[in-house]
Image (tube, rainbow, N blue to C red):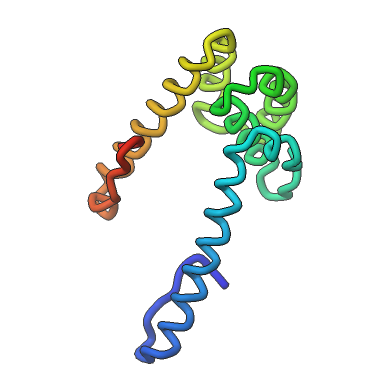
Length: 140
């Protein structure tokens, strides 16, 4: 199943395909929610994606940072730097440096990340096709 379903004139087939897509999305959301637990984050493989090895390392680091797990952040830092060497992501090095500078203040790390999310959502909502992007109560 892909990430998009088009209507081709058959309501029943479209309904089945869109339901399947929604169920897949729900499964992924539930998987992502487990990342909020730092113990679970430790079990996520760091370099598991052939296409973009950066993202697993980055996601694990960000989960640890949001959870305030400073020892895990320090453990993951070199792995994130190595992943960035292979897949340079615009703005990631700056964000990593900023988070690392706040390791002695986990509450500020959380606020920094949430502010980045708010800014990114505002950016996407400024695009013509995404003006109706829902407004999240915490993330804008």
